[in-house]
Length: 283
Image (cartoon, rainbow, N blue to C red; front, side, top):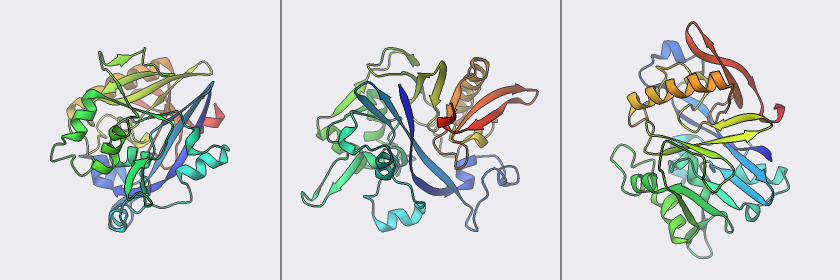
């Protein structure tokens, strides 16, 4: 097995929303905001190469939305999904599976393209299976008012219409047998049935953190995003996961951290904290 970081660019989100009830005086040094209180965040995806299978975990925000849409999120940087694939001498048609941790636009926007010739949306990965789960799909396609702006129909409906959608059936919080090259932990605080891949790699367990832990700055328990639909559940899920991850020496792959790609944890007298930070290719 080989793992590859797929950088898809950076965007900005309100610092207060990203750190929830934690006051700015505590978080502003972790991710310094601009004059509009906006902080820069990565959209860091993961490519899993195993035999003839190439599985892309999340896809970033994509480029099909309107200029007005992007004006809210300040997409920037030289990285893109295509550029990152090109550096590996890969193209979209090489991808066999697209695994979507959840269907918020910054995680699945790159899964769908606008086809001007057909005047319609189409899957960005024509030969890939797209993976979600029934409970989250229902949550996303009949969204609550709080998350409606994050679940964009043009990112979601074309996947099912293409016939490329595959569903994991959630039978417990942790699934070993998924039909993929990794196990999956389901968590419900950020959104219903978000999926966190647990990948066995070089004798270690790599966990793709998605939005349970968007950055190393979110490791302390109270640092819970204002975007989370069930923050007290997030708090409980984080506490349980962090204790287990620290004791088992898991490596966390951080999707949104603008500086730290991966990290390990340590148990301190202040609780679980980051131990070492490093790049994926340093493992």
